Image (cartoon, rainbow, N blue to C red):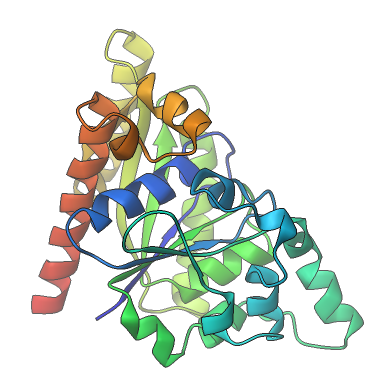
Length: 262
């Protein structure tokens, strides 16, 4: 079975993209086959995984518009077992293009496009969302079976979370009854600061079993790996950032295994 995971939070800078491709890389180490879908017009996930999406003819834009077959949009990345549907700035125009073409801008569009036998070739589909709750993110939420919500251990983290959870609840009621929150992921955690520990404790008190045990630290190896165009476990496998994402991958696999048994 293929598990479709959306990584989302409308707040920017919380580690969505970093989590998307580092989780993909960590899962690939366990011989899992991953399809990353970059659904952010900035294309940062594509760039981070070594694909220059600005020069590509087929991207996530074609996926949503239905102008190319899914298998022709998927790109092989430099990393074993990781494949990518890239994004560039044209993705920002998808909604207006649909309107201009008198087509429906429904939030089930991505889900319909992923209903393809090609998807069955992958163990995990991981969707990286833009920092908003607009057309693209709503499509990702509707297409997903489970959610990972990165929560930055800084001020205002819980304010953004409340709005996101209300949106998730609405999606669960209206367009995706199967959607589950796999977990909230604490990111950019610095154990030396009281603020990080206080927010981590508050999130755990509020959401209990819906918070991953794994915590992503504020670790210099993670931004260094981004600058090198590498996942952190390719750059420095023994770093605390790499070990944290490997731990997250194990939790994700355990979650899916438990779900399949039930």
